Length: 352
Image 1 (cartoon, rainbow, N blue to C red):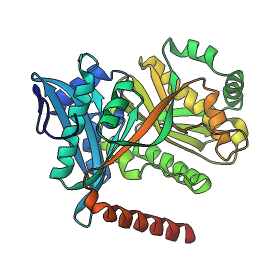
Image 2: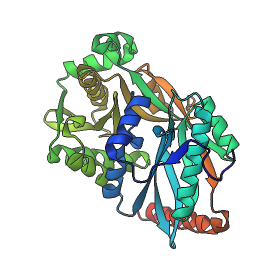
Image 3: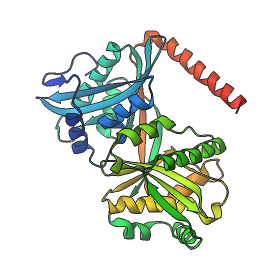
C-alpha cells in the first residue's frame, strides 16, 4: 500500500473522544506513553499557544486499531512539521497490524494535506512491523536515539539491591549528611524547581521543556499524577525534578541542580526518593530521559551524565525517527524556518 485511500474495512474517525482514545492507548500501551495520551494534546494547546494538534484514529470493522497524535506550528500560512512523539500506536491484537500501520500513516498524511502541513515526522519505538510500514510508505529514517528506563517491578527493596553499589553509597552519604527530600504539588515548589532548571540549562546548554508546560500540567492534569521532588540541605534547595505519570510509567520530565554542594549527593537521593514513591504507587517504570545513539563514550562531553544514569541499572529503549515530505513543493518554507531558528539561536547565544 502506498498512500491513497484506506483499505476496505478501515475507516478514519473524525474528532475521537478522549475516552475512546485513552482506552485504546491504555490497552495497547499499558506501560505508559505520555506524549500520545489525549491529555497531552490538550496540555500542548495550553503550553504552546502557537502549536496545533492533529489526532488520527482509525478503525477496522468499527473497532479502533491505531492512533497517532502530533503537533505542528504554522509558518507563512503553512504547517511546517507534524511531530508525532512515540507514535503511532497500532493494535497488537490485529493479525494484519502492518496494514493497520500503513492505513494509519495514510490517514495522517491525509490530515497533513488537509491542514497544509509540509512534512510528517515520527519518533517511534523500534518495532519490525512499524519500521516496515514506514519503508513501504516511503519514509526516510533520519536519526536514532534512546530513552533510559529503570525497571521498578518488584518494589523498592529489589531496586535497591539492583542499582550500582556506588549509587547506594551516594544515597547513604546524602542521608548521613542530612539531605532531605520533599514531594509536593505547591506552586512555590514548582517555582523553586524551575529556577534550578534554568541554572542547569545555563550551565550545561540543553533545551528544557518550557515553564508553560509544567504550569499546564500543574493546573490541568490529575494532581495525583504529578509532583515536584526537591532535595534540600541546611534549608536550601539543591536539586529538583518534575515527575509526571501516565500508565505505569513515572517520567522525570526535567531536573535541575546547583553546582555547589554536589559532595552531599542531592540528585542521587532525590531520584531515589522519587523512585521509592513510584514503587509505593505500583508504577513499574521510571523514565530518566534521553540518551544519544550510540551512547556517549568515556572522555566525551556527555559521558558524565551517561555514567550517572547507567548506575541506576536501567535499560536503553531505542527510538527511530522517520520523516517524509508530504507537500514537497513547499520545502523552501522549511529551509526559511530553519534559517530563522538558527539565527535566533545565535543571537541568543551572543547576548547570553
